[in-house]
Structures are given as C-alpha cells and as structure tokens.
Length: 264
Image (tube, rainbow, N blue to C red; front, side):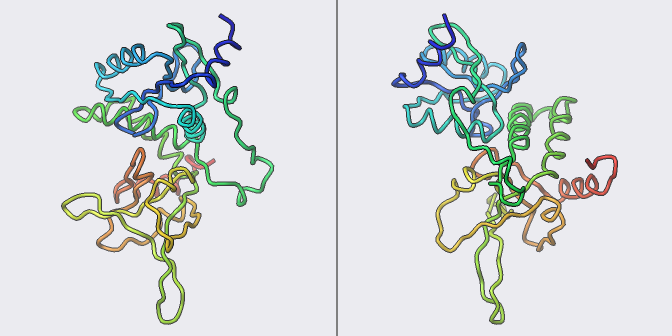
C-alpha cells in the first residue's frame, strides 16, 4: 500500500480513534523503537484501538480510546504538534504506518520573529512532561527508577529554558494598578498553587474570566518569585498533564540555575 493512499484516508475518514493517557489527559506518547519518532497511536478501526489500549493498560498505562470526527482529528493533530509530538503511528486496515505530523497539518513558522514576539510554545518541555507524567504515575509504587529520574532531570532542564503564560487579575492598591497572580486550590486539605501554562492551547482550557489577563514570564523569574505562606508553588498546565512545582522542586531549579555546568 502506497503512503499517499494512507495519507489520503485521513481527511476522508468519518471517525478515527486516538489513545489518550489518563495520566496526562493528552495523547499517549511513545518513542518508536525503529524510527525514534515521538508518536501517538491512531487507528481507523475501533477494535484495533481497543486492543492497543488493553496492551497499554496491562503495562500499568491507564488510557482511554477517543473517537474523533474530522474537526476533532484536526484539533488533535494541532495540539499534538504544539506538545512536541512529531508523528503518529497510524494503524490503517490492520497495517502500521509512521506519518509525520507536518505531512498532515501545517503550523505557522515564527522562527524569523524576534524571540519576544513569538507565541509562547514549549514543545520540548511539553514532550518531556508527557513522558514523565506517564511513567511516574504508572509507577507510584516505585517512583525512583533510573528512567524516571532521567526523565525528571530532562524535564527540569527544559523548565529552566521555558517562558510561561501566567494568568493575572488587575487590582487597585493605593490608587495604583497591580497584577495579582491567581491561585488554585489543589486539595481538600487546603493546598494552593499558582497556575502557569506552556502555551495558548493549555491557557484556553482555563474557565473564561473577562477580568483575567495573561502575561509572559520567564522561568528564571518565576522560580525566584517570593511565595506567600498560603501558596505551595506553581502548577504547570493544571487542566492537562498537571505538573506541580513545590518548594523542594523550586529549590532544585534555583540550584540548577546557578550551577555553571548546567547552563547553556
């Protein structure tokens, strides 16, 4: 079967099926053994998707099979590209094909713009968060494996390189307008964290509020932000992979930042 036939089947499909990780609320990602692409699993038949789903669940990777219509397919591909996934492993008529996402969707190229004018995207960070979230939440009984520690270290390095979207609300203090960060209650025990986002897609998952604006803040400034006693840290993409940065992690990030060997 020729690849162009496989590609042509995608826009013609009434429905396709995607495996979503229950741990990240985003497509399950996997590094393909042969191509080394970071892939998501896509299927033209639900039966084959359910078989793969059961295989992953047997390996402690809780997941859900999503049924996508054409609008959902395009949205899922765009979200995957922003999250650093570069390909899908497409099971079409029982055969598997690696399809690069740039063969399906075309994203705008902002590389010619000055860094401060580019939309906030953190594809490398998003991807490492997905891998880390999948692994550590599937192995809560043994979270200190070398693989998990390596993924965490890579994720922390990418956090330090990131720019984040931070929701703020304007408040008046002594006649002056100030920006106040929001806080989310994250547990019944009263824990609170400041939500921060890797990109506009994740930011827009937050419930709408006309009084809330977004500002761009570099990680090196966030990690040195003075915390009030009632705040436990930051929460990256709370409606998605949801990675907390508590006091211990923030301290680790500050130590990494001031260590010359870890700077690029």
